[in-house]
Each structure stands twice: as structure tokens, then as C-alpha cells.
Length: 151
Image 1: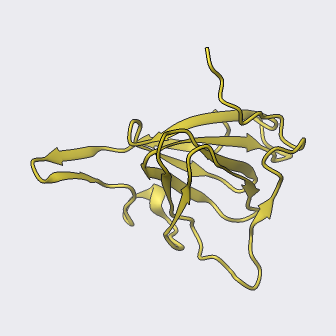
Image 2 (image 1 turned 90 degrees about the vertical axis):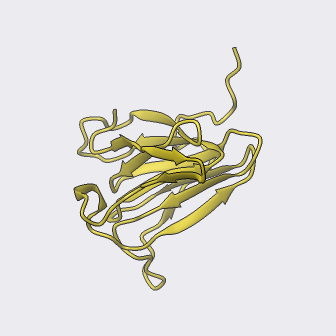
Image 3 (image 1 turned 180 degrees about the vertical axis):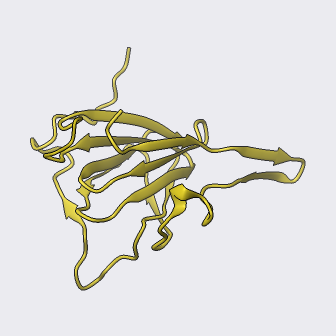
């Protein structure tokens, strides 16, 4: 596991009306501090990434469909520098991921329908000075191939 990354299974509470899934609470240490909540959607087979933050911590889950979320530790002072980690997150595996600054991440929708990802970063987006840095999804900076692996 990449240093500083935290995962937590999310509990689904079903009943005859449907279900409830609590994602993050303000009184949970994992939920502090709170910046904003946003939704991003990836269509089947689409890769959204790579990007990273120098200051922001992300806390994300997929609430509809399935996505492969891939992390790459690019922090110079990290004991796990250069490591990759894959997480399959969504309806079949409800999981919350906490991603610290300096860990590059991307997602790919791996199911037959769109993947809806909710992110709760620890700070609001700053339109004047965005803490958002991007790398090409299929470039050479990160040693990762987004292709499906059959077998």
C-alpha cells in the first residue's frame, strides 16, 4: 500500500425501500477538514487522469457503476515512492479512498455503464490558484498501462 493512503469499506444498509450508504461524516477523523463535495462521471472505457495536488487531500468513492482507481506515489520523500496501487471501487466494492497530496491518481470506468465518482476534498477548489496538476493519461511519466488485462 502507498504510504498515507487510507481505505475503508463502506457499509450498505438495505431494506425493502432500497438502501443507504454512509460515505463520510464530519465527526469522523477521516472527514476533517472539509472543503467541498463534487461528482465526476466517466463513460465506459474512459480514462480520467492523471492528476495530483500539492496541498489537497482527496477522499473518493464510486457510487454507481465500477471504476478502477490507480494511484502512483511521486513524492520525493515517501518510503513508497514509485509504487503503483489499483483499487476496483463501486457498486460491487463500496470503498472510500483517502489520497494524500503528491500521490498522482486516475480512474477508468471498467463496467458496461458510466461510473459516478464522488470526491470530498479537504479544501474548496480555488479558481484563482487551482491546486490541480495534470499528466497525460497514456504518457510515459507514469509506468502504467490502462488496457484491460484478460486472462
